[in-house]
Amino acid sequence: MKKVLKNVSFVFLLLKMCVILGQHASVQKRIVIDVGHGGKDSGAIGINGMQEKDVVLDIALEILSSNKQSKTPFDIYLTRYSDTLISLSDRTKLAKALKADIFISLHCNHSENPNARGIEMYVANTISQHSKETTWLAFELQASFKRQLGFESRGVKFGNFQVLRETLDYFPAVLLELGFLSNRDENNYFSNLSNIRLSALSILLIIQKY
Image 1 (cartoon, helix red, strand yellow):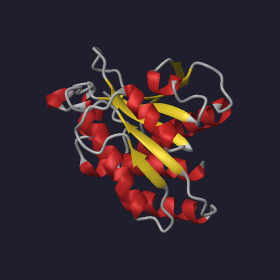
Image 2: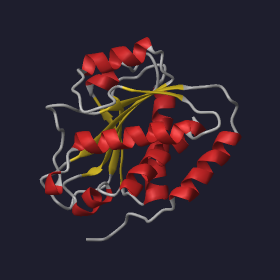
Image 3: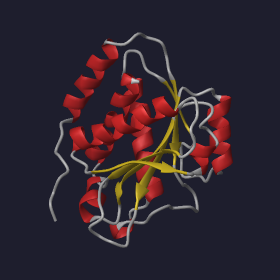
Image 4: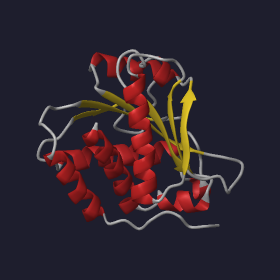
């Protein structure tokens, strides 16, 4: 199997994040990171029992940590901060109540085919006033993971996920499938804390460009 994931310096990405942040006005954006699954809902289960709910929570918490290190941090909220199960409707209600500027839902993929790999970005399959911004955000996120970290891209796709359907009229909303836990390379990638941090930084880089 071809190895495509890159060994990227955390310091390099952090410096790049600081440069981009310095080029933007200090208008604070409010970001809601929807941390998929949780509690009794493990989501996908990968090789050696790795659980989707844990991977996405680790990434989300690293987003918070890296954001706090910025000189002008964003106003970031998570839909869950621990291993708890939050209903889909409560997740979208929270984002709408907070009047989010961006909504990003984090997930990992799974397939019966162990060779399936790569990232997928989903946007709502219904047109709204935020469709153009949402599509831009989705393409930038998939490009960042491909360029910065070496993930293969499976493209930007349309989906009828509840968290996208219920938020499409309020703000740009994207659902990320961050690799296949059923793929040994990608499963191993997310078992490394340094790579969790790099994934978090890649997401922050695109939020800063928005």
